Image (cartoon, rainbow, N blue to C red; front, side, top):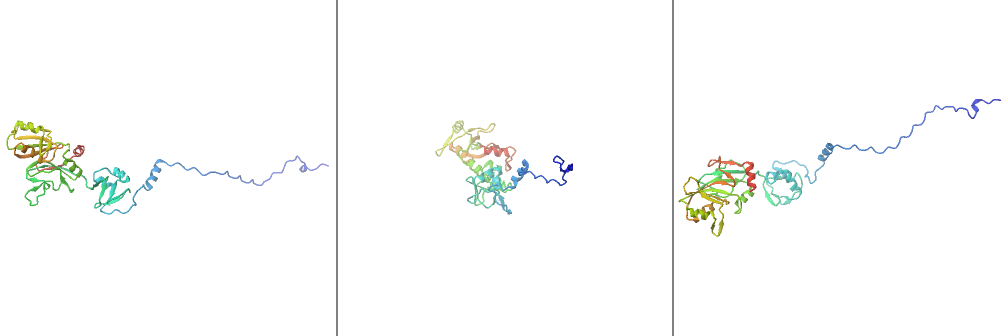
Length: 296
């Protein structure tokens, strides 16, 4: 008998209609972070708190940032002031301050690199002083003061560089830059001043020669850079070039040779002249003139 084909060993296997199970997903590592652009990094850096930065608070009316205070004093720029602050070279009321953005009051005492400073902007005023005004304070009011002539020129507390008596005329510099006042008051400072001196009688040529070689007065040797008669003027009119801004020294030189000084006019001061500056008038120095004075 023949068996049915379904029982044969070599017959085809019936197909299954059941769905196959889904394949398991391959394990994946964490996604790589997308590199940030330079602009994004800069934004994040700005958001981060700067080192030594003072906590933000409401600024009062009479307060100013320490770096601006320093910059206003004229010693350096704001950016350089930040460097000095971070390095610990700035003190406020005797206490070192290293925090950026620190606020100070105008009444605070700020010490910058060992020197007390003020936040006033530096002012430099050149006056062509007329006769009859003095740099000295007159308790009895007999003489008029040179400050009358520069009144209204600035709100800063300025002072004259050197002294002038009421009979001396010519260039007189005013400033609130104490370093410059001190610099031009030193006996060994290098800037030249030119004076026109009027004498009571003709200056003898032999006396002119002696003066040109230098004069010793009260055991102090006074160097004279130049001395000469003024061209097309009587021999009573003398031009003398010295480094000192002390007008008394000019007078002493000629009195040492028995001449009476009738008038002294300072016609040049450290490269500054009376050009376009009538007697009794003043003007502000230019930026270049200020640089020149500081570099002397």
